[in-house]
Image (cartoon, rainbow, N blue to C red):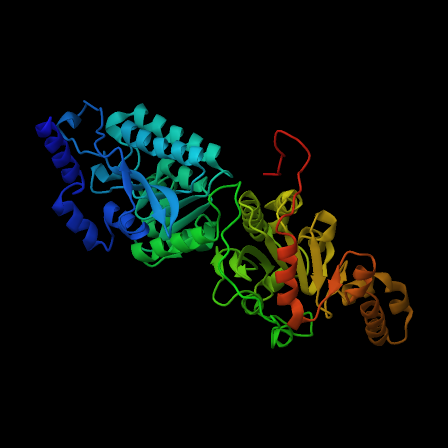
Amino acid sequence: MKEKINTLLAKLEASKLGGGEERIKKQHAKGKLTARERISFLMDEASFEEIGALVTHRSKDFGMEKQIFEGDGVITGYGTIEGRLVYVFAQDFTVFGGSLSETHAEKIVKIMELSLKAGVPLIGLNDSGGARIQEGVNSLGGYADIFYRNVMASGVVPQLSAIMGPCAGGAVYSPAMTDFTIMVEQTSYMFVTGPNVVKTVTNEEISSEDLGGASAHSTKSGVTHLTAANDYDCIQKLKRLLSYLPQNCEELPNKVPYELGEEYIDGLEELIPASANQPYDMRSVINKIIDPNSFLEIQENFADNILIGYARLGGRSIGIVANQPMSLAGVLDVNASKKAARFVRTCDCFNVPLLVLVDVPGFLPGTDQEWNGIITNGAKLLYAFSEATVPRISVITRKAYGGAYDVMNSKHIGADMNYAFPTAEIAVMGAKGASEIIFKNEIRASENPEETLKEKEKEYAEKFANPYRAASRGFIDEVVLPKEIRRKLIKSFALLENKKHVNPKKKHGNIPL
C-alpha cells in the first residue's frame, strides 16, 4: 500500500512539471507564465486544492498511447481569492499545446458543475491550440459540453475568462458566453478562423495579432472587455474585477468599510460647460462623484461615446453607464447601445446597482446606422434598462434630447430616482432645430429671419432648456446642485439597498437580438 501511495505521489509531482523543463523555458521566453504559476499568482497563498491531477487521456490512435501526461493539459480545482472561494481551470500549453481532449473537457465540466452547485464564481485561464485532432468528434463533443454549462451558469455565478495564449475555432465560444473576457497584449489571440484560412478564402494576408489580438478585439470588435500588458497584470485585473461582484445571483456585492462625511464636491460644476455644444470629459465627472480611484472602466477603447464600468460609492459597489460628450457628442449608436445593454444586464444579473449619467443629444443619424440596425440595437439598451430590477438612479448632467432621453434610464422605464443639475435640458430636440420647425412660418415671413430665429430659440429654451418642467410632472425627482450630488447618491443607494421588484412571470423575455 505504501509503495502504491509513493507511486501516486511521484506521478502527481511529475504532472506539476507540465510538459517538461524545455517546454516551460519556451513558455517563459515568450513572456508567459506556466499554468501553475498563473494559479499561484491568482489564488491566496496555499489555498489552491487541485481536482483531477491524475486524469489522463483515453486516446489510443496516432501513437497517443505512448504520450501520457497526468492532468491532460488542464489544471482544475478551487481555492480563495482575498478570502472568497472560487473555482478555476488553467489550460497548460506545455502539454499537447493545451489542446482539448475528451478528458480535458470532462475536468472543466466537473468544476463548472461544482461552481454552479456551490454558488461560487468560475475563472477560466485559457491557453489552448484548440480541439485535439487525434480524438476527432470526442474533442468536439467536449467543447459542446462546456458551452452548455456556460449557458446554465450564466446569470447564476460570475464567469470570468482570461485569454493568455491562443484561443481559436470553436474554443472562442466559451469565453464569449462568459460575463467578462480579458486578453493579454501580444501573447494572446482569438478568432474563429485563423490567418491561413482567411488567406485561402479571401486572399487577404493578415497576422494573428492583427486578426484577433488584444488590440483588435478591444477597439474593433468589442469582444474583449479588458486588456492586460502581461500575465501578471491580467491576473491583477481579474482579482479587481471580481471584487465588484458577489459570489452568485442570490447575494449582494461586498461593501468595503467607509466612514460617511459631509460628501460635498468642490469644482464639479466647473467641469460641465454651459454651452450644450461644448464637449467635456465625463470621466472627470465620474471620478469626482465616486470614491477615489475606484473606477474600473470596461471596454474602454470600444464605442467610446458611452462609458461603462464599476466603481464604489460610499463603499458600495455600483455599475456606471454614462454618455461621453468627448466622442460623437455622446450620441447613442449601434455599438454604444450594444455595449451598454450587455453591461446593464450583467449588473442586473448580479445585484449591482446602476448609476446612469446622462448627456445625450439623441441617436446617431445616417444610412450606415439605419442599415446596421440602430432600431433593434437601440432597442436592446431600452429593453435592458426596462427589464433591470436592481436599484437604478439617473443624473442628467446637461442635456437629454429625443428618444435617447427615454432610453437612458428615464423615470418612464422604471428608474427609481432621477436627478438633474439646474443647467439640464430635457426636450424633444435642441432649441435651434425645434424653433426652425415650430416657428417656420413666422421666421419665413419675418423681415429679419435670422433675428427672429434667435428670438424664437430663446423663447423655446426658456420653456424647455431646463429641468423644471420635467420636475413639475414628477419625471425628475429633484433638481440638485452639482456639489450635493455625491451626498444625494450615497443616501439614495442606501435607501434602495433592499429594493424588491419582480417582473411578470414568464419563461423568459424576447430581447431584440
